Image (tube, rainbow, N blue to C red; front, side, top):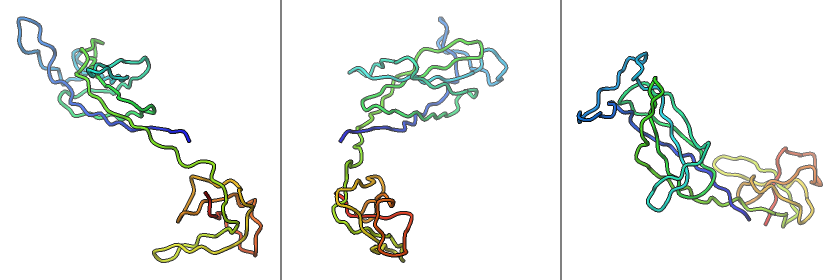
Length: 186
């Protein structure tokens, strides 16, 4: 069996409220809330890549998302999907309407773990095929036919330890021919 992984990573930040201070000033000017002003916020771009041991990001081309950002001090959120396991670093920049970008933010990191793949290569271990009947707070299995031993089972579809099988391969024992049937597989 192989493995697959994916994680929805939610990143949160608060937009800057001030521009960078220009010496000798110790505090930058307020970012305008008038969205037509060239110094007003236009966007935030989040970049990501693998992390070095000291959490320094190694950014990869194309691993970025840009979010329209216009309100200074507003909380923002973006979600990205990571499909490769490992430790991932994220940084962001603000860009204003004039096209001037900030330095990178402090990095943050998230860990994406391996997720095991479902069981594979399951085959029929008992020839009886069942119709799953839903009852009040439980399931019942009604025998409806047979299937050859070692027939492939559908590993992602199961109930009560029984897996779905291809109904076209069933030898029916009566007129009941449901859309989904299950068998014991292993």
